[in-house]
Length: 236
Ligand SMILES: Nc1ncnc2c1ncn2[C@@H]1O[C@H](COP(=O)(O)OP(=O)(O)OP(=O)(O)O)[C@@H](O)[C@H]1O
Image (cartoon, rainbow, N blue to C red; front, side):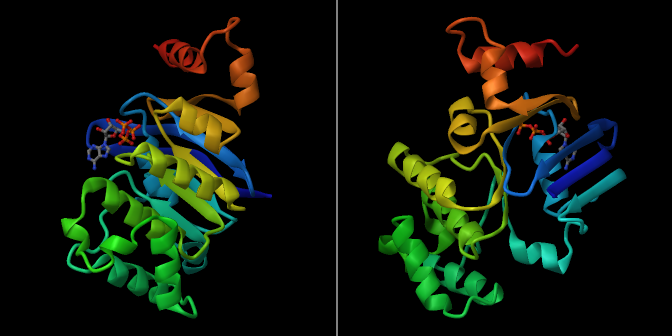
């Protein structure tokens, strides 16, 4: 069964065609990276899947339901490119509030567990708006994952994180049993978090397949970044 499906999706912003006949699907449990040059339409795709934007044309399904459906919201975790937790709430209040909204039985316990997992305990009484950019990102990740979502959409998840935290987050994400779509520019993130890639350019899919297939398209010893760059530059 597919958990994520886009069929002939179009999205325009004024004169800019952000998505043009975009179609792809991701089986439940699949781990996919969304790659593409700047302005390719990755964030727009993520926002549509998260129900934050409506496509102009085309169909989008999450487990057969429309994005934004109540049932979909319950099982989805979406990390936008520039997430902003509630600025005036503290780290702990943000976590407890979202845990309560998510209907988690013991929000206080869950908040503590997430702070411990992401090394946020020392900031628990700091307002989110006063955190460093990296700690805001950690909090945003904690907020997205606290209900153990079945479908996880991550837009540049490791932005702003220091290397030990990147490793910690990669470890957490790898342990989760979920359907993943991760938008990134960093190939090593794609190869460590996912096993399939969808490459888009100018709002359409230009290549999709397994990372093994992608690597095999390279000449001997050619880095995977160079294979991806070649794919992207082949599109006029
Ligand atoms: N709200 C908006 N208003 C106007 N244009 C927009 C809006 N959102 C996106 N666009 C345009 O749509 C196109 C696709 O943008 P999108 O952010 O989806 O690309 P992206 O692949 O995520 O890029 P990047 O890798 O640079 O983050 C771009 O040309 C962008 O300028």
